[in-house]
Length: 605
Image 1: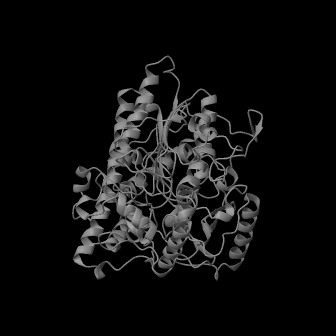
Image 2: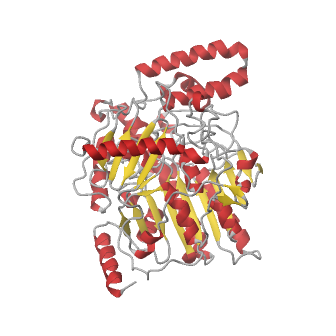
Image 3: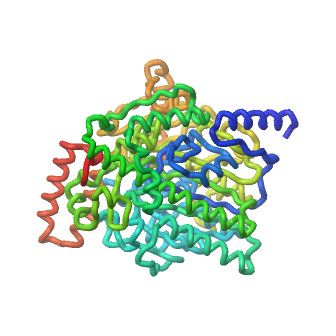
């Protein structure tokens, strides 16, 4: 790199640091490391501004330190739900091509088993773990897996040498055998490809980090200590039920007494001050956001407690991330480690208590008293109003294709990465796998793996951005499509074409400049009619090329979860005597849901 270019990069980095509340750290010399350790930290259901370094009031000092020592991506996109994002993270292949066109929990019956809609990884993809293992990396995973619990899809068959995983969409964070909803017959735990013998109690974030530290330390003491490692820690924080140790919860007492609208505004202002968003970024008030001042004092207190627990769960996760970092420093491995932190989708807004069947089940298995929220045996959510604040200043949340559902924090840190810098160009979850492989000096599969045909990775490596000052990795005219549960989008440079289904969306196409208007407040279809038309054509081509299926009329993801529970759990369990009763319950639940769309509990549940 020429001296003038290097000086320009250092000047830009210094300007970004001065605009940030995070103190600047000295810049390292540019240049990609050779085969570093790679640690991927995946949070569950964190909104765009849930990290301190992205504008949050939540204490995340360890993630903030990584941000200070690396790069924050303010325009990074995933899918709007858990398993499709995880499938793309591991393979670098669009979820419809890798088999996870929808989650098992939310897939409509009409799509089940269709090509691209297995709801688990298919046999036409290879994971980064397999490629890294072949190249001499040690490979570990601990946490939520959710891309298939069939024998051929367990981590030991997907490239991980050591693994302890929870196989489904989630579970209780205090009791290993306790389901978070009645969606499966039990909690499925696997260790190294076999059913795991789990402790009866744990705290999920602590346990996953404990196991990962043990894996790394064990191999460091063995003969293969010189090998680099790939460690994937997939946390359950902050998936429902929202639970956290009491000591963390009490730190947030009275922090949220002013409500979700005030929080949404303050987070927006901090994100702008940090340089993550354009000055005066506008934002909308979502139709699902309730009027805080219309709540009673008791309702406000209950809702504030829910957010206190949510913040505590995030801080607890960060604390245990810090324990992993400390262990790597003590072992001398930290300086040769690249860290990647991201969330799998935006914050969870669904309210299981709004569905009669779930409400009855939860009433039998969980407590919801205010003074017990977060504890063992208690169940908490945050609902759409707090979820909107967690995504501030973006629109929508988990399940939907608005920026609040699919734009999440991404931090990448390591030696010689441009420190305390912000990357504002569009980036995508499919970019992560190619980045990992280039860090490790491993080639992407060229259409085959061990003699079997596999899908080609479609993303772009972020190495030019991380180490060499490039301002974007996707060309301004590149089309990148997206679809999940009928919510659709197409990205082209700074522009986004998007359609969200009711009840959150209107089912129509809209066009936004998400660089200048990340809150999606100014529809540009009238002022840019040619672009609007050409992007619709490009989306149609994406859907055709990737085998996207149309959604059945009346589809709504929260309702589909409980319909699938009836089909896959209740009817097989209770057989024919209960079928009529269950069908009646489904009908009643559906009618009630149509009358009162999920919007979060205002008081005790």
